[in-house]
Every structure is written in C-alpha cells, then in structure tokens.
Length: 360
Ligand code: PHE
Image (cartoon, rainbow, N blue to C red; front, top):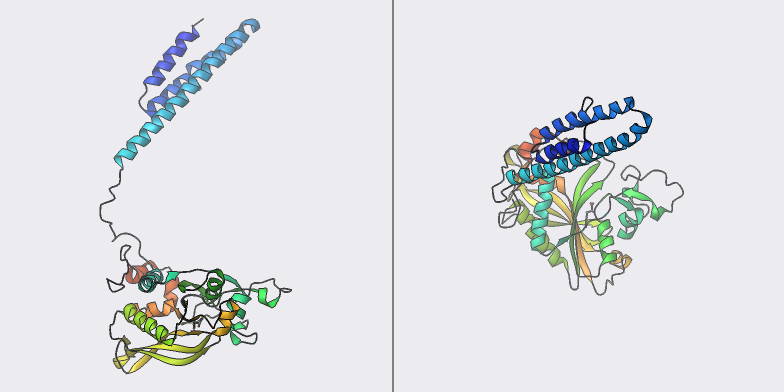
C-alpha cells in the first residue's frame, strides 16, 4: 500500500509552490476532484477488509483534510497577493483634475440651494432642517395660522391618512412650507438665531406652474434690536448677489402673513419689452419672496420674550428663483429626470458657487 506520508508531502509541496489561483485549482482537481488521487484512495477503501478499512479510512480522511486546509491557506495567500497587486497598480492620483465632461451634472435645484447657502453663509447664516411630515401644531398653530385659515383646507394641505380620532394639533401633515422649522429652531436654541432652511414642501396643487412637491428656503433672524431695516438690507443684498446684478431694483410691498407683522412681499425690477423677460432695471416688477417681522405671538409661542427679542423671517420658492435666474421656462421639467434637460441646465460637478465667482 502506498505511503500516505509521501503522497501528502508531494501535494503540500505543490500547493505551497503555486503562484496562481488557476494552478491551485488544477491541483485541487487532481487531488480531490471526481477522478483525483485522494478521491481514488477514498473509493479504494471499499475493497478493504473491515478491520483494515477503519485505520486506513481515518488516515485517508486525515490526508484529505490536510490537503483541503493547505488549499484554503494557499487560496487566502493568493487572494491577498492579487489584491495587493491591484491596489498597487490601480493607485489613484488624487491630484489629477476631474474629467467633468462625461460625468454627472448637478441639478439646478441643488445648485441653487448651494448658491443660497454661499450667499447667506457669508452673512452669518447656518443651515437648519426639519421633518417633511409635520404636526399641525408646527405647520400651522404655532405660526399663528388660525383654525379657519384657508391653507388648512383639504384641497391645499396633504393630511396623512388614518388620523380620525387624533387631536387637531397632533394631526400629521406634509409640511406646506418651511416655516415650521422656525418654530423648531426657536424651541431648540436660544437667540441669537440666524438660519436658512432649504427643503421640500408639499401642497395638493398640480398644474403647469404648481407641483405637489416643490422646494422653499426659509430664513429666520432673531436677535436683540432687530428691525425692518435689517430685513430690507439683508434681502436687498441677497437679491443682488443671487441675480448677480449690483444695481438690481428691489421693492418692498405691504402684504399679509399670519406669522409676521408687518409683512412685505419683495419684488425685483425687470423688463418685459419685446416679449422676453429680463431681470434688472426696467418698467416692470416681479414678485420673488415673502417676508416680515416675526409676529410677537409666534415668538411667545416658542418661549422667546417679544419685549427682549425681535426678528425677521422670509420664505421663497427655490424652483421659482432658479427658473428666473437660469431661464428655465417650465416647472414640470425639474422633476422629469430627462438627461438631455439635465445636460442643458445642469452644472458641472466642480462649479462650486461662491460670492467671489458671482455665486455662479
Ligand atoms: N411661509 C410663507 C409661504 O410659504 C413664506 C414666508 C416665510 C413669508 C417667512 C413670510 C415669512 O408662502
């Protein structure tokens, strides 16, 4: 009978000497495959006398285990070597310039949000966020929006289903504006507060100029001695930086929001001569945002003393200002995921907005 020791030594020698996974696989087949040598030894056990079979069987099985273990170790060694080789070969040079032309594009909404953050960031604002599913309390009540206010009607607000027995103030809605984040921020931190809140908002409206999901940016400043002059200065500065027009006319028109007093809508100058819209000095005005001094009741609702602190807030539609700045004619195209549209209106990955580059 063949010596199992010399068989084992020969296989182990071959296995340790292998330099490739292919060669290793050939060894495995030659030893343990259907017609392999060790498989043959196992098959041969059947023809032995019972008393011989027991000792020989244990020895052959041990041989098989040893070869399997050596194969496993060799495979791990070769896998690691091939990984090391790949890591060395495929090293990335981080200093090479990005190939932007075949790569993805930044969606105009993301770009516009980055621009807003760049501009307001320079003025000391930080970014705050809040949930899309809000309590009625944060979306309406705390903002001084009364129970009978038309915005609460089913046809404007998405109410979540299955809330039959819920207290009115705890009912869940998809937030209809970013203003609830004003409340959450004032509850969570003490003034001074200077935040912008870019994010998604939802209203049950759908036509050529309204989408059930759209984006807004909210702004909130709460400090001592803040007055209407700060609101005007801040928003004039913003409009001129965003549209990159130093002498852009900006007009404040009295308006009404339940959560601000007084309230103002902000218009920018434009001209519609010859049919096309041009932003800048001209005979016409274009409304772009809502604003006002935070209502004392809203401050009090958040535990901020209106005798000590004042502030202003503003809100605007991100799609709207993006359409105006980049000449995008149709709101619906923002959400169609049409690559041709994105290649046309999108931005290169490294086109980072900053005030130095004119926010563009
Ligand atoms: N929340 C208002 C809207 O959605 C916008 C706004 C925000 C107005 C803050 C004034 C102050 O229309």
